[in-house]
Amino acid sequence: MILGVQILGIAFGLFMAYLSFLHYKRKEFGKGQILFWEIIWLLLVILILFPQTISGIVQELGIARVMDFFIILGFIFITILTFYNYTALNKIKHKLEEKIREESLKELDK
Amino acid sequence: MDSITQKTPFQKIVVIIPAYNEEKTIGQVIKEVKNHVDNIIVIDDGSGDQTYSVAKNSAQNIVVLRHKINLGKGAALKTGCEAALKLNADIIAIMDADGQHSPKDLLKLLNKLQKENLDIVFGMRPMNKEMPILMRLGNKFLTKTINILFGISIQDTQSGLRTFTKNAYYKIKWLACDYFAETEMIINAAKNRLKYQEVPIETIYHDTYKGTTIFDGIKVFINILKNKFI
Image (tube, rainbow over all chains, first blue to last red; front, side, top):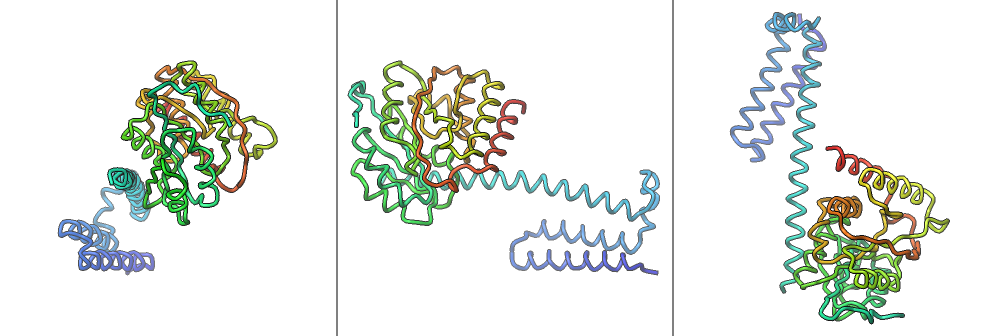
């Protein structure tokens, strides 16, 4: 029997898969990116539907429930994503600064 | 007003004025300074008002550059210094656009730099009741921290009025785009053992809501620690 929390998780996974597809259709994602994200969401949905498939690994890791494993995984994922966003943002800020300053200095040559 | 009578021949002095939404004061600041330096460079740092056109129409010997979006004081100063070098500046001065610095003080700093053959001269504001209390406390704390961590002896690390030679610029070059740039200059001056002095200046506070905020102060403090320990 599927629990309420599983339904919520599946709905979330499907919604994110749809969002990723939307980005692909708008040409904001390349083929590699859409493939990566769709695999992630598909895996999430499968694991939510059949949590017992990873119960062995979960026990091996000393985690009581599959649900706890998902929460830990979520935290790890968010931390990685935050770090990635931080570095990407810094890179963009730096590039933007260079470009704007370069352009303003062009006025000097006029 | 004094003029720089002691100016060494062939030393080109360029003053850089970073400005962000300063249409009310920039014209007056330029008028007061224009006769005492060879060039004025105003960096309009993405202002939403008429700062650019007011500055452009204020004097003949002026260069006005514009950042299309607001990058911060440090970035504006970087652009200004690069432009000054392109104009073959020997001495670079920086001052605020809000009229808080007196041109007389700018001349005092320039004279000190040239007479005593220094690398860099900082303006030193009096820490009296004229300075808003939060700014006074924050400044004292940051100044103490910098003095202890970098073995330098400066009374006012956050003053925006300063002058330095072209050669000193290469050694104090900063990376920060925000208000930390001014602190980074001091840290780099200390690291490179540059010859520095402070000159007392007066400060007129027109608008307590402009300039550095408490959050800028916290950011500067974090950056000081990062600069020292990371």
